Image 1 (cartoon, rainbow, N blue to C red):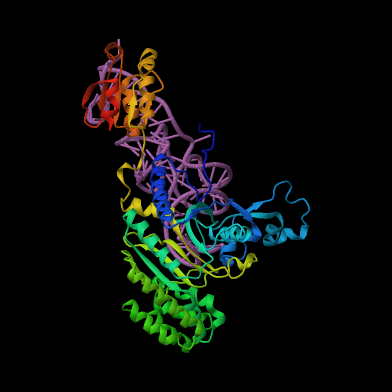
Image 2: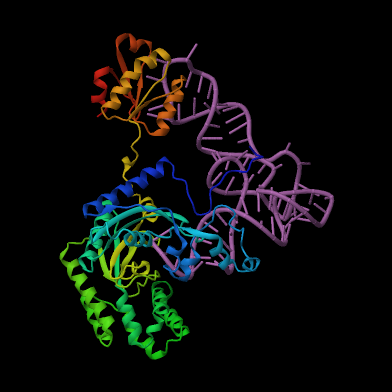
Length: 453
RNA sequence: GUGAUUGUAGCUCAGUUGGUUAGAGCGCCGGUUUGUGGCACCGGAGGUCGUGGGUUCGACCCCCAUCAUUCACCCCA
């Protein structure tokens, strides 16, 4: 034992034992049930995609975080020696596949490939793991699950509303208070136009996204570093500091963005969406957050982010509208919008706030003792009959001391234990013990099922 | 990719200016109780102190390297 290296799993990956799986399935089931309720259908795509499908969709930063898969066979067979100096070019030469980085891009690829078979607007949900070669830390894993809902082929902002409703309902069911933050990329574009730096949109969004973390002054410094002049910064500043009601925020933004048609469109979209939201009876907090930018390159309209109010772990959902994602794959004019629930972070939130229901583990209801072959023969038909009635139960497989069998039941959290030895067999009965109270009952075979309900 | 942090029993951790057989709690196994668990008491197994070098009469402790861990930044679920 000491000689052998302890086995391990790769950095940023995890095993999920029975206890974790109970919690995870509770989350997946809850989310899935809401997705279905809104008319979304399931989709699964392969773990790996062609690298060409993935590259360039997530920005430079995202490209670096892609897990690439070495070609099978002798991948390096015909590699020119000069390539060995350039790891970037080399990796493209020897890897033609990569692990999926999110579920949205594979979804867009799927839609383009199957465009003739789909009914549009196409609504699908997808719950699968994704992989990112990030350095792991709290709430960040290299393999984690996303639960995506997307509608593609409709420009209506009712779709955005539906995503807000879904988010609202999911977190109501999970018992978590969240804040749903909404922004619009067009507003950000408009902002960059208004200050005369429409080419600096990405720098602008990256900088103002940080305002919560590093503060106004640091953001201004970063903007200046990007080459934006004082006049531009002074135009942006009041917008970043917007306070008050949604209506007040919208009015102020409208004013600033008036010179920009795109920006004005963005404000109008926000207005319309918040108009819907006001009438939809949303219970969770929903607010406009201009500092919300989101790095993913493909968003063009609404942007969503959800944070837990009572637990610090970064965002637990993110999404937005993308007008051109399918265009990259050769199908233009197909706008989509979606949101992704981060199941692993939601798990951490539920655990941190102690919000998992107590009965999440659906293990055996009763354990049957094993006191020998005659006793087992007597019990097996009873076991089978309970199972036929939908009661989870098991029989201890080895003949051993009752202490050991009791311990086993305790550890697995099985609430009842049935003892049947010579005495019981003779009388055609069974001894049912409630392990929590210690109470014991003598029951006829037919009475067992009723006693367990 | 950048900056830190930690690495001693299955788990959580002690280990005094470097000194002989490296400790505790929990867990595990056995016994008190050969058909009645949780409690209690008694006993036991289990570690080449992450790995590889170096300094030293002597290293868990100091130095270097390496791997792993955790956290923060970047970015994100």
